[in-house]
Image 1 (cartoon, rainbow, N blue to C red):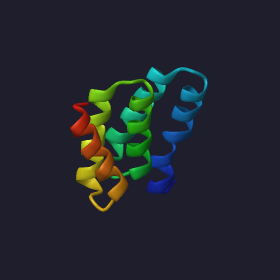
Image 2 (tube, one colour):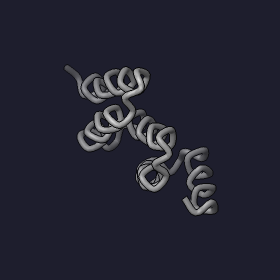
Image 3 (cartoon, rainbow, N blue to C red):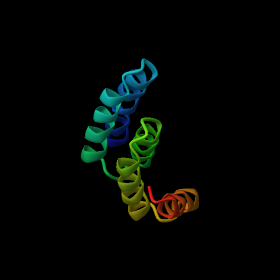
Image 4 (tube, rainbow, N blue to C red):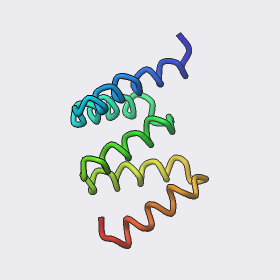
Length: 89
């Protein structure tokens, strides 16, 4: 199994949990995926969105900060982080 396939294996189970209303469990799967594959932009983004949906703003901000540190070329994420900072979240 190649590395890209391995890292994306976390996303479908997490998405299934989130869609079935089990967001905390979905977040846990994503957290484990990000810990195992920190350079997966897809997993990082999914985790930020999951936290935001659950209104876990401090966790969302930390996850977004980590994402922007790893992927500074993402202008949309940089702008989102700036807005979060301005909002005090």
